[in-house]
Structure formats: C-alpha cells, structure tokens
Image (cartoon, rainbow, N blue to C red; front, side):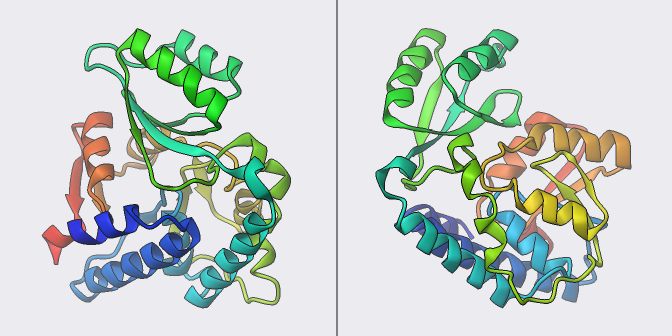
Length: 254
C-alpha cells in the first residue's frame, strides 16, 4: 500500500494517476466486501470521488477512463495558463488557521481545500506561490509540494466545468445503491440531479473535508471511518479532526 501511494505520487500525469488510484481503491473495496465489510456511506477526497462513483453503482469503471481521457485532451490543448503548483500547507500545532488567514488567501485569489484544522491543500500559480512562501515564512507554515503541474480545485477551472461529464455521454448513469456524501459540497447526495450538479463543480470547487467528516459524525451518526488508500494521509487527518471516531486503514481489516 505504501509503495503504491509513492508510485502514484511520483506520476506526473494526473489523469493516469486518477485511473490507477480508482482501480486500486475498487479492488480494496471489493476485498473488504468479500470479508463482509460494507459501508453505510461512501465519500471521496478529490480523485477518490471516481471510485466512489463506481462502487456506489452510478457508473462503470470504463466511464471513469472515458472521463479522464476527455479531461486529458482538454488540458493538453489549454497551454500554460492551466499549469499550477499543488501543495499542502500545515500550520503549527497550537496555531490553527485563522479567519484572517483565510481572508489573506481570498485576497490572493487562492481557494484552499480545508482538510483539517491545521492542514490545507491548494493549487496556485507561480506568482501566488511566491507570495505564499513569504506568508508561510512569516507564520511558520510548512509547505509540501506535489508532483502534479496542472491546476486542481482552482477557480480558473470553472469554465471547464462541463468537461468533467463529457466523457459520460451515452453512458448509463444509475441511482446510487449506497449513500453518498460529497466532500466538495459538504452534503449528502441522494438523487442523480444532485450528483450531476456536483460533477459540474468537482474540477474547481475546493474540498470541505474537515466539515464533511464532522457532519457525518454529528448529523448522521457515523463514528467509524475506513480509508481504502492507497495512502494513509486521510486517516491521519481523521484523527486530527475527530479523535473520538475510529479511523482504520483497509489493509488492517483484510
């Protein structure tokens, strides 16, 4: 599992990574099901939304491949305007991100994904990155860059929102067989029209992972979370968000 996550993280093509990660997560989920472990809810974290859509019965794996190929062609013709720097931003233990910090991000045109009280993910251009480095030094934030060089969950991608569903043209889309919670919209998705609406925002809206975990716990009574991987970062974030809930890695259960 750890080796899988390292290989995926080092793959510069985000669309190939998405397809491979989806296949791995579906295989792990099927293995869990063979042991009688089935979820009450499924929620994805960006690329994990692909496996979420297949596992819940919405679409077939072949549809995921078609969507990613469509996006690959779209991004390939867009040029450098859609290149970006993807990174994680962590603040010191006793100093979580504040309201003024988020006001600063907004002033810079940065849409951070709120992953945990002390951890954000974001996609920025080179100018924003230089300003961010200065702000990080001032506030003692640590920065970790990812390998991908395309913008992800950034407002500049809003005009491409329909590209996310072009690959589904002609495909049969079914009602989900498992309850779905959206970490993008921070709400449950019960009907196809809600899921289509989310698909049009999934490229450019930031994640609300922190709020989504808390909502599942407090509003829907979820107290155990299983991370299907391939990396362990979500379990670590889970323990930071809600220590009272149990966070397990799938490999621990199979």
